Length: 472
Image 1 (cartoon, one colour):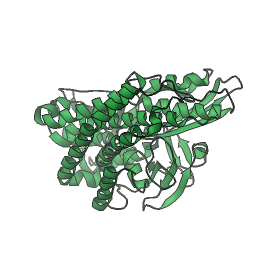
Image 2: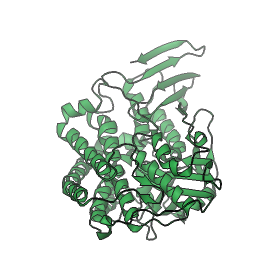
Image 3: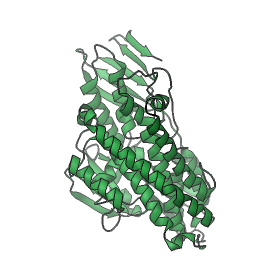
Image 4: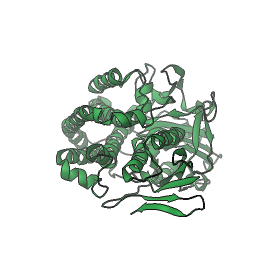
């Protein structure tokens, strides 16, 4: 048995490596995704006051701190047993939409577009955002402008772009100023134009990726996402809907407090990332996908005019259920458009400038669950406290964790189709990394490679002798 190791996967948030096992004929026999970092937030927060959890858990990630802030704050709302003011709920959702826009812009333009625009087999020395800027300057500038807009929404509301303290248990700690509202409204038309222009471009080049679409995680799984009572997409609120691989609803409107009745968590021998699964089916058969593709496959519609047109075309083009993980990219752009439209609706709600923004209370429940849609999928924070409000137990199910089983299966499919173990080529191994990037995983912090081969690959013989090597 020979092994190829991709160490590390690049252009993702965090650290991971991939092992590819080859049989004696040089064909792929199996693959494994290894998440090589451990953070320990669930354990070292024990003993901290529950109201500190939003600011603590936001430090899990510098890319999506707003997602952890909101999920944590909602768990704390449940511990306090309060219903936050209407204005606070609108402001939290507005902040969340800004997070979605900036995060999806980062994923599509900065992390994945080098493959999509320059080619999976292009020179790795230029296959990066700087190469995109050189060859496709307008698209690169659009990506920078769109991400900047999302970040400015966050900083306008919360006064900080990263790890803001504005979202707190019970609501938010400051109202929206009219000048900030007007500034965000003024920036929406350009943001909307950028997303629509990018969608038009991307739909026009999809036919160039037929082989990747067919083999990039094109497999039957379940799907999960948050929806409202009418089945429309929800990012901040809503209950979990599970659909099977044929698009049938198998569970619906699951509230945050009942997630544990449907979602189990397994551990994998070669990874620090947990592997959630749909409990009624069991592990590992109960694999499901979340995130943009999961949401497009579970929701009935988006709920905003332009995004609904794109949603309908998405399914008209690709089917009632869209199984290829390559289409995470497509779904991500539709959600960015939804985020911009939803911001416009929220800002035009008269309650958005209200002054009642926070509910105050102490510990009224010894347990609380907060659940939202992070850009990468469902995010759950589950806390238990003592009578004094100190954390006695915490469990976090991060978006990327839900996709863990599907990512592993996708890697195996890509490797078996593209990898020839008798002759190493950087492009074929880049496709193995690219399927991971399609999911836009967040492994807590980012890795980068620019101007060099972003891989260290070894082909080992039966005795462990290095037969071939490709490294930066």
